[in-house]
Length: 269
Length: 328
Image (cartoon, rainbow over all chains, first blue to last red; front, side, top):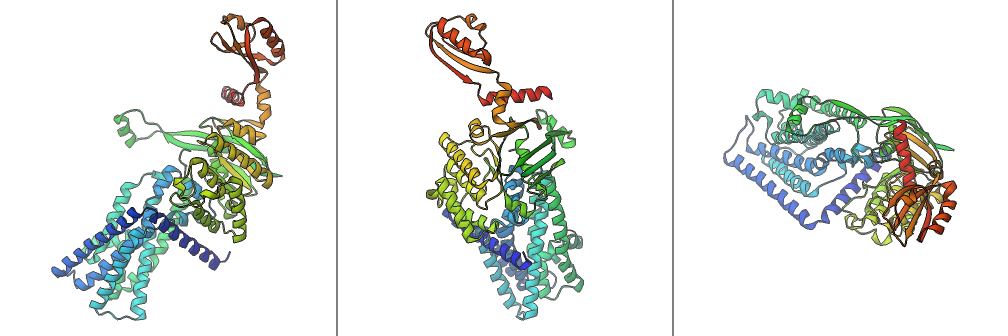
């Protein structure tokens, strides 16, 4: 099967995963609607946060409220992508390992990683954040009077894609540890806290935190680099680093995944 | 033609023990004494195309672990296996497309969706053509008589209906090798019977090679000619099911109902007394003597009813387990 055919097959499968997830969620109407409402309420809470930024005329270095809105918008958009598309699958991995439900998935003739990490989609989590995030990005873009051209839009989308890839691999790695440790809820808590570091420009944090967030646990690349690119605050070396990080994470993650699968010792039948 | 060849398959698991109480939990936080359990030890066998083989053993014998290694879920600690020319734990897609596993206690159907949506997803996962998918699905749906439940959310179905749908999900891609791990567990008598009949017909019509584990002897007796028995991870028997009985049964079981109370001593010379309550007696007698003893009992005792039967297969197998333990 050629690469194009394989890609087409996986896209078709992913579309079916989305369809099945939506059908399954709609079977429980109350829960589906409540989920949407709760996530929308959270979004409003984030909007209050934006209001505070404007009312206090918060400046972080040279970055003013209109620019900060771009950071919050990018963070909100990527929160929707992370939790709606990946996160709900990631937190199930330790459960699959502990209960043995991973086993039947292992016998399917498609990538197990694809099947386990992308099988469920939660539209209730994804939609409010994605729509809210895009709205904030557009408002900020207008307020800051950024040009709309191939360079700015293309560059921003490039960093968003890099952010999505880093999010996927960076937050999957801790869950893979469950192949060895079975329960990883403590690591989950750390991951979730790290994610929340991202809702403000990284210049807010001290230099040592920059170093950690850029090079050791490259969390800041996810939501900071897109806006920083638009404000012309990125160095060329940062751009190369951002483009290289996904490869490092993909290799590390695959290595761990394959070792984990080999180490899989099965739940009692 | 040999389709499955297993040589010295071995699987060791690491585990640790924790004594009762909080103190030992604290001790375990600092140091855990690792222990190794041999779940499967040097198991070897071969299975021909189209065979349906029962894989038997008490709980914890290593049956499911062996099936998991043969289906590629687990890596063995030692040994080799070849199934249709593939090494299962290399997990090649060609191998996965040619085999299937059903675990009685695990589901591959989406719980919140009607089964038909899960089937359509499997069609795409196995990359089946529309024609193949429709033909196989229609045939299986008809054979298992589940047309009326295809569009109902899986979680709303009975266990029997769900197991039938699990079987369809496992067979949609027409596997050449099928592993069935307790497919009738928890089912009522009629559902068990339906599934047995289906499997019998499916095996006969498609020549699919099947390895079946079950604790229900009726499944084994009805479906398989050959059985492989393991206990404590070791293979203790590989042969015809009918020979399990002949190997252990040089005896018959005689159930006697009496119209008057008789003393236990009056039966002691006839054979070994298995049950006694004064009016009902169960005796085990040597095969060579059962006619003579039956005659004697009918002539000299106040008999209301008398039945003579072979010792049930379960007991033959239990004796086999015990023998295996003594040998080890």
